Length: 120
Image 1 (spheres, rainbow, N blue to C red):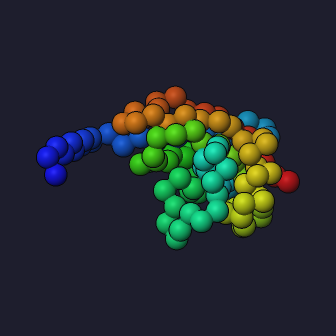
Image 2 (spheres, rainbow, N blue to C red):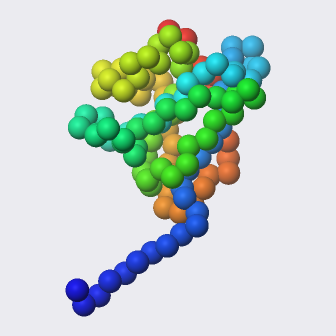
């Protein structure tokens, strides 16, 4: 190797937001899912970097950290329908109503997205 370039950062890209129920109150019982818009949801391995889920906090907030840069869909779901969320068919249906988010290299989005939970 004649040339080697290493890039270090103390800022991992990611984003966060909040989920509200149908009355506009913080939703502490939602699962938030993030997945890539490119439709590559198959052959992702046991620990996918671009396909994740988190539960909301008591205040309805959520955060995703250390996501690779790219375009993502984000959706909030009830526990009952979030059971098989990693199945490609489920993600394809969710993509129709999900919010689009762009994660840029070493940039953390400070803007929070408020979304309503999907219940069906």
